[in-house]
Length: 336
Image 1 (cartoon, rainbow, N blue to C red):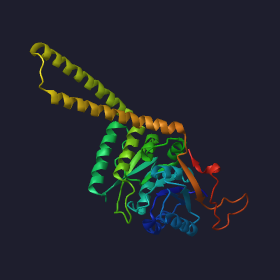
Image 2 (image 1 turned 45 degrees about the horizontal axis):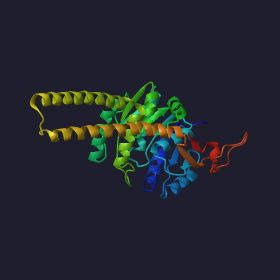
Image 3 (image 1 turned 90 degrees about the vertical axis):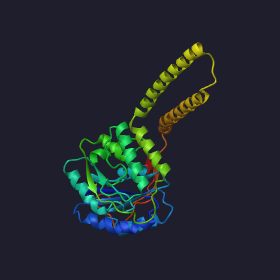
Image 4 (image 1 turned 90 degrees about the horizontal axis):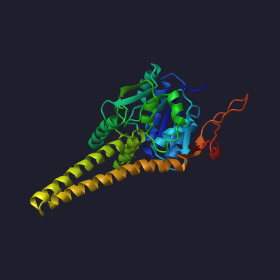
């Protein structure tokens, strides 16, 4: 029988937290009393995460599947691969670091059953550093002004999606995307719930400051043309102001004669305009770079193997613990 609930968990160097995750996740899902599956996607971990995932698969092959990438493609590509592999009618994404308690999954499932097709989560009390909290809030405000996406807590991965939203996401072939925002654009009846948040059980965050900046660039440039339009309007305003300044200097020269004063003011104006131009070139480069990546049409990710119970032949039951791994890439291992 098909699972009603699918949990998609990207894993990257989470050896220190996986045992604790297993100990809490499976009992929490068993307590829901519904058919479920858990899809772990290993995003090229270099520690012992793969061994722990394989061992957990052998313990609970009935509800566990493991997708193994051949390299590191990023958290959102891992989530998209999980969506492609998952079979449930309700999808829930969860980080492996235990900052989002698995016991909170039931809140999102209940909200989906009320008729919502996308359910985000808001951390009641964030257990992050001050700079990350402030940076996240600032980017939330900027994103809401630039796009039509209304996500209160964009940095929280604990989210639920209905099957129809996932099917639409699976049809997309974007090289770079922000999964929660993409799902929000397809949702007809989104909602949010407040959840608890815990300190990271072990290890450290995989997102550096640079990664967070890159993620927000992808979010802004992937869902709105407003940055380009704002820069165009800024260019017109600066051009008009520069024209007025030149006219004023010309009139002053005709009336008062040549002068050597104000040189540093002109230098300041020139440097300011140069900075604006360089920023504009960088902004254009972001959009052009996305086009360049898209037209190359390279695979978004490559699956090395999938650990799952072998599908039974017609009229036969699958042997206990039978594994269909090392799935041929030409069959289903390349993400487009």
